[in-house]
Image 1 (spheres, helix red, strand yellow):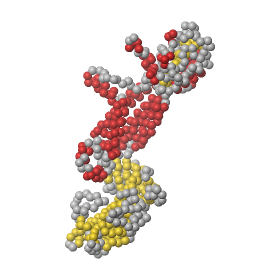
Image 2 (cartoon, rainbow, N blue to C red):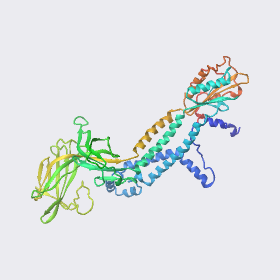
Image 3 (cartoon, rainbow, N blue to C red):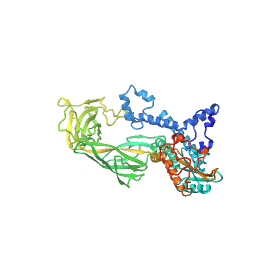
Image 4 (tube, rainbow, N blue to C red):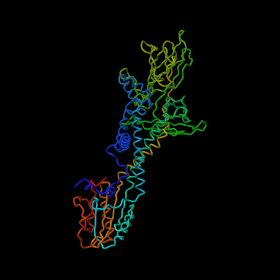
Length: 587
């Protein structure tokens, strides 16, 4: 027997094909460059390559989560480089500090875009053609189908076919009735499976498009605001700003707000003592250029406020001591609220005070610097071993610990400086009582500086909050794509695509032979159950003969394909029972 004899007829191949996906070629077609180009295009747009690219994109995003990124925190990147000087140049060449804008990440992203587009367009066109066409005609030999049933009846073939067509339409099958000597009914159901498949691909494409749009037209800035102070969304007032190709400083949304007060509460008892319970920034904001029309609003963690096309997130908070410095004559040379940065969960905070306009002393220009800690809840005593440390994040027992320096702060050098760090290169630590000049101050306390440098007072303290101003126009598109992708995936996994054929013809003995056959794409007993139910309902119009008739030799099914799955054996059958779906018969 040759391979040609084993190959099923063309109409049966068409009937068994249940997907609208284009057929993939296993080898290059054509000759020369055109053939190889066509083959590479088919490989790129195949599902296998799309899944590989999606997996590579997931792997490529891992370094962006583990390594500091310039787009998120350039200062943290510089700190990381200083701590890993040997490997930092290698990371620079591999663009690991700019993963999401790197050449290799962009290449994977673009290839995935092309792969999805090349898969979706022909697949959609193919599916539209399948929807518009009639269900595939019944194969010549229905016994080849994995689910099959047959019986003889005295009913007219046209009547049987019409009844089957009516019953299938009632069951919401898309049915087509063909007339003639070999009239049959072809029905199909479960188109939502392929719709879900296409929806998943389109949604994934929209998801990637949303991310791409966000990366090209988004911007983000940060701002620390002390209670009572205000903020306007301009480059001069932002602490930092990261733009994109289509979003720069000139595109900032016009708005501003004033931080009236900040509420923070913590667990005070139990195993969770010190854990945050509530962080709320109470603000009044305005949109556009008119700052006179203020609206009240609250910003909480994970509950941003939409203002003027941007979202304002609350990302941190801390304490800011109010400090006044006077010279030896009692003149106020410095008065400001100084934010201190938290170092642990109990808000042990560090900060510096830079008095750049102190004046002259002994004929020389002098500047003062103070380095210290703010402890919201200070212990009764702490020594050099433990150091200054807060016991609780709430302000139960606030204490300010300062160390004094004098000399040149370096602020007149023209080089940028970190406002939260003190450059000790040209500073000398002041001495007092035979040791370094240090002081522990409670609110309202004044420290008399040594060497006739005047005084410094800890007047009070306020709370501050840090905000992230984010403009990301593609987030809604990405979110919609993600939701639709899940819905499409559910449809493609749980909806069963299946076909049923019913043929009633007059046999050589003058009786009508009724044949039912089914084909399902998934391994499920549903097609066998539906075929059995259809056969039972069809008995009303085509009752089976009580006396069995000999089966026709040409229509005898292959009994080796039967299994123990529930079938239509309860239907009086003279040729073959309904057989369950066979995984070998699927696409």
